[in-house]
Image 1 (cartoon, rainbow, N blue to C red):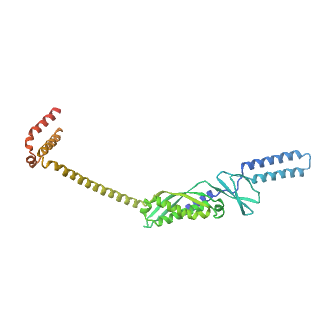
Image 2 (image 1 turned 45 degrees about the vertical axis):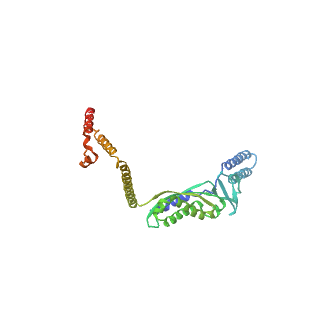
Amino acid sequence: MEKKESRKEKLEMRLNRELPFRVSGIGVAVGVFFWLIGILGAIYLDNRVSEGWAAAFFLLFLLIGLFFLYAIQVARQWEKAVVLRFGRFIGLRGPGLFFILPLVDQVSTWIDHRVMVTPFNAEKTLTRDTVPVDVDAVLFWVVWDAEKAALEVENYKTAIAWAAQTALREVIGQKPLSDILVGRAKMDAELQQIIDERTTPWGITVQSVEIRDIVIPQELEDAMSRQAQAERERQARVILGESEKQIADSFAQASQAYINNPTALHLRAMNMLFEGLKEKGALVIVPSSAVDTMNLGGLSGVVSLAQQQTEQKS
């Protein structure tokens, strides 16, 4: 497993390296132009001068073509070329067309000034409460000083990736699992500050850090799910109890209207019986105490009337 990861890292490092040497299309066109002049001129001089002079003429234009092939360079709009002369830094070139002296000058690095995106992660990293987690994040950064990015660090893309990964591991180790799961925004801000402090000497600034995913062990995830379910059940029971309390208070307030008004209580009882007997086959059981208290003995006519209405509907 470690061998596979090391191979993957080496491959990423190779892909992240910019090729310092480039051949521009303009340089190729100019070089081919001089080579054609040399070939045609050598053919023309073949029968007019000695072979040595014809070969010298061809060799001269061949060298001129090679000179312009390497001397003419083009940097794209978002690039800066770091130029060294005999190994010493002489300046930045680009964007656009510029010239160098072959064998004297060298374009060591092409610096990209666009916003770059670097994904990074921390696998099996222990939190402060010793819980292993896997965290995936994305880093957005930009080079603001091409000279520092080229001269202060060997490979700035690889360096910022490693700096981001080590900072992520440090932040995870300082926080409990609950803070990591809940406080993603705060964790993003802390990571941005830590990584930016490390990369500022390299001429690189960090624009933002965003955590994409946090993976915890399956056993812990199941336990947290059961805990959340139990908490929801507790809240549901509390809400149900509060509802029962409010209903009891409402009934208590409504009963105040019937204390000194037996006629209203009698009408309410009749309404309740009538509503209960509207459905076909309905059976209403009334306690004997309620019959005496609410004077329900005189409601037989109402009951028989309700039964006749249900029979007619059927």
